[in-house]
Length: 294
Length: 232
Image 1 (cartoon, rainbow over the protein chains, first blue to last red):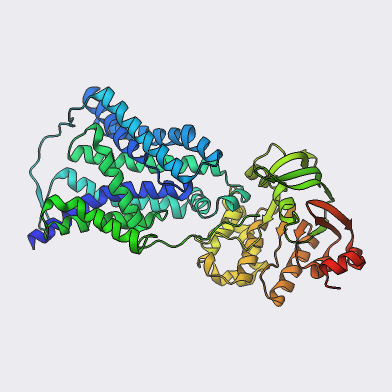
Image 2: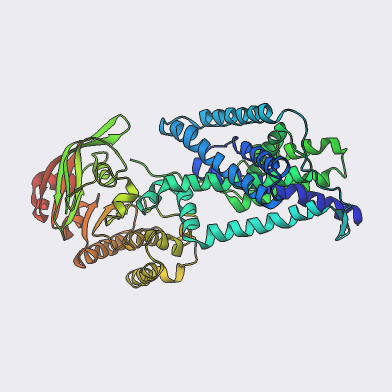
């Protein structure tokens, strides 16, 4: 039983991070309509900015984390404003946007490498012995990850379903043209979505940096896993993407009970390929209705 | 109230409207008829800034709308019921109505919502349902109710009877007439020329992106109109 408890707990830890990334991907996709790989930049930048303030400038941890998350949100908005919106205005195809987002991600990674160097960094938190939680050993940071993610998702759901702006954001994701005719400022909604989505990525980056360490290349795997989770759940549907994140985390971590742990990533991507082949709209996804034109 | 002045408009590089001029007075119920692809919907969309303007202007209450974005035009008091019963599928009926009053104070939205439920009692039992689960007629009612949430001075309807059964079509026309009687100026694009001409005060026929004919309900007596649009 203890082994299963541990596997499930490990799945929830990984799933929380994947779900945060996937929620960000899905939020942005709902309005931008393309896979924004540059989302990975927010993950990396938030972690390094938080590290700079907490470790180098000796700011209190929580203030550093808030600055890191804010930096991620601002970066997401700026990237959208400077790169994606002009491309979308020129009616560039989604492939061009996808490639440019990948380029932006690589550029940001290179800048982080130039500024901080290639060596692995750490927040230097004291190593704590894992405590027993429901039969599994969990460190305090891991417990924070498991508990914080549902709180964030709850707040996100409150925003999306219970506030006027949140409902307007969902309306814009549903049909941008009709949203405009309701008096909704669609451009503002796009900034809000990219800011919010990037902030979620930033939270994931900081949590992973706390639990493990930081390096300039930490974003790539987060992008791949977040994207996989979003597609498994149903891209564009935030609750579905979150569930996709947890499903992926659990599948990977329970899977390593049956196959060597070196195949953990292969399990995740195997599931991803199966979904792409047999259910590309994702587990909970629906096919979209085309907008009217003419 | 509304003046479309020598308007050339279309989509991207494609010009659809050529030198279109239409004037609406306060309280008018104006219909626009014409063959498929003639530019009827483009005319309505141009009022809303949903097309590319090449030349000319759209004035609302004397104010030039050319430089205003769509969401800014809405706030001046123009409501829009799009073609194809376009509701927000993933939102509930209640959320759809609330989006119609986006930006208004909560109390005003609540008040208008109750008003709309009196006008469209069928929607009352469906408030918690996703809009995609409504029938075609109910979606059209929701679409009209949503546009009325802001108490528009001018309501633009793009083929509100399209795809509906005759009974529901007649009901929709009744509602449009009632809205107009209550003081809302209406401009409606319609394929169902017979019923539309019966309730209108003014009519325009658009052909190949140009205003080919204009007049009152008596337009229905013109032989060319009868032949082309009234099956006679």
